Amino acid sequence: MITSTGNAQVKNIIQLMQKTKARREQGLFVAEGRKMFYEAPRHWIQKVYISETLAQDENFLGTAQGLDFEVVSDKVFRQMSDTQTPQGVLTVLKRPYYTMEQMLSGENPLLLVLEDLQDPGNVGTILRTGEGAGVQGVFLTKSTVDVFNPKVIRSTMGSIYRIPFLYVEDVPALQEKMKKHGVRMFAAHLNGKNTYDRESYAGGTAFLIGNEGNGLSSSACACADTWIQIPMAGRVESLNAAMAAGILMYEAARQRRSS
Image (cartoon, rainbow, N blue to C red; front, side, top):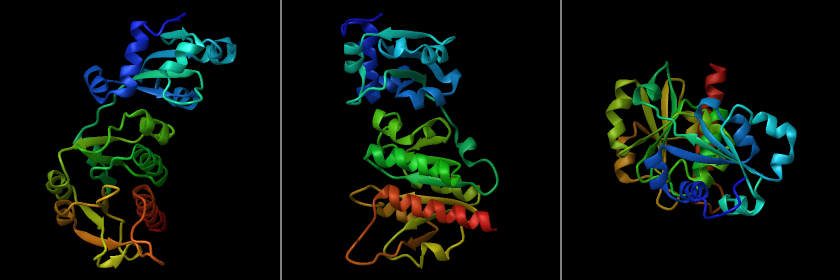
């Protein structure tokens, strides 16, 4: 059992939790909690760390059989954890890698493009909502928060394992690829031609979602085939990025179920 915070493995887990650079260099990320452990693809798992308290649960310990796991004292585990109330299990996983071809394959894909989003909770919620709405993949610009940030991972509630994603330089870098595959890009904009529910998303569709504070850049808006409006009542000027993405994704899902 690991009992010291000076242990090299403990130090490395803390680095993986805190540093994007460490995650990229090692090709690993950490998922915290029982749900994330249970749903993790077994071939992604490199190692599992279990608190001494949870290790006393024979049923749980049985689920870790066949995996490389280490028991950690409760005190040390709390230091490794990124949450205030740890659930007693940290799963170290290999980062998945997807290609542009995978993202754009299939007939009439439904996609998201996230431009420079900074809030981990927003990105994680969008991935989770995207899975629920049947989104095929998510593109993220290079300035968007690291999708393997522990707060993003927690917010996905397991969808990180099932939704393909790919970082790109910027939105203009995607424009030709989208056109080549017959995917129309839609940008929510105050000067949108129609409200979002008056457009058709039955064909290949990509929704552009902008930064929480600044919205979509002018260059991203220029790439869109169509600008759409999400109507606002009262004095509200805009919606939370994850909320706006959810509205658009589920409208597309509704149309596709009806067609």
